[in-house]
Length: 171
Image (cartoon, rainbow, N blue to C red; front, side, top):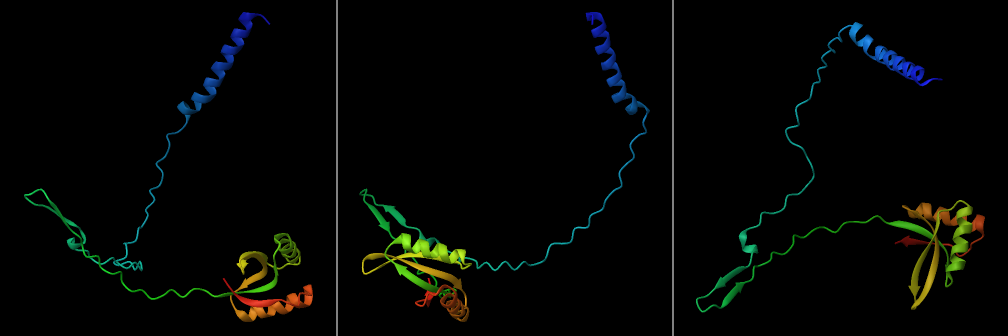
């Protein structure tokens, strides 16, 4: 194609594109006002119970006092630090696990744990020390009730033929 023909084709394409974009804007109707949406926001509650205990008010006697005498000696008065308030001990959850083996070699413990996992149990290896030697306990669980742990021990003894399975408190 010749150069002038190419330029005319490009110019015609640009004019048609501009017409397609701007003519509907000029001919179209004015946009209508969208409907006003009213949203009712409720009043905030008068008092909110957050369960946060406020700290006791501290007085300035918690700060150290520094005095400089005329003979340029410094006297520091140490503050009296109040004792912390007494708190009730927090009662922790007690859980139970079934201990199915104790090994001195981690490979053996991992192999038994893998076998139990394949059988559908939630087994894990718990490393520890006994008589200054490293031991690896294979355990199943934890369960929140001792009764469930006892039932789990019976199932492990029957299905996996692990006769030495015992129920212990965890951790």
